[in-house]
Length: 289
Image 1 (spheres, helix red, strand yellow):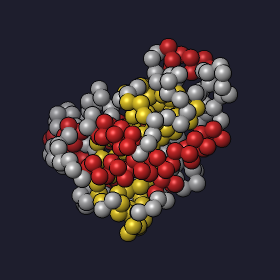
Image 2 (tube, rainbow, N blue to C red):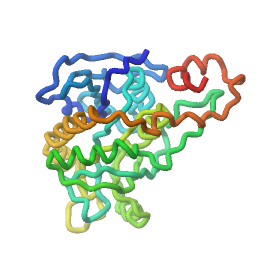
Image 3 (spheres, one colour):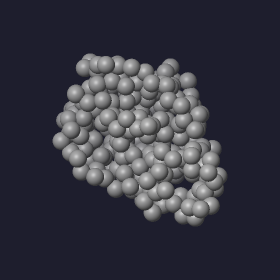
Image 4 (cartoon, rainbow, N blue to C red):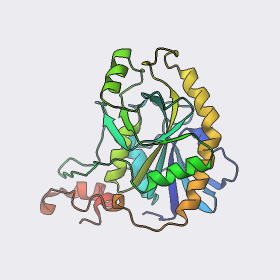
């Protein structure tokens, strides 16, 4: 039962929605076929539009990157009728010019995770969704404009390698990723972006560079203190960028290919899809059926 009234969903730290101008705030506990989301979703009105916030790791940062229930998180936004998601993520830089404190809007993902549920499908229904360009080609440049207008030091593009975590990289791993041409390293872009595509929701990432991982010889290796310090310093920029983006979204009604990603993705004979699977995924596949 999608409400179709929420302009934007934001996944990030719980501090993001402690912002001036957010009114009519309420918490929503969403039940999904994939379990509970990381936390209740906080709804509010910002810049005249309804928005939804979700603390990816739960309030108080209780969940490791691999414990996050990515399927439930994305599905809950789908239940609410969210059509666009912005991920606000901490990351390490694998490029000299992407310095701590800078913000990057990546355009690619390199997935090295192993132990995560990364699709809504299975159990009798197979779908092969296209993720050649895993971040939304319409939302990402708009998000970049919003960050720049908020005063952030912005870089557009770059491959975001997702590691399992929760540990940080070894130096050997960090140097190997640099040789592969990766630009950023983090722990949550996958499978979040892929699930958003399966749910036909536009998805873009506002990646906040907190450190140089462990490859840079002239600075200390990454620590939790570094990450928190930089994120706190960038919170105001992230909040203003969200306000700016909402203003842009109010001016655009252009359709996006992300919203029809499943059109030719289902390969299973419709007559052979188990009835319980049809019912569980009806919110996602109702248009195809």
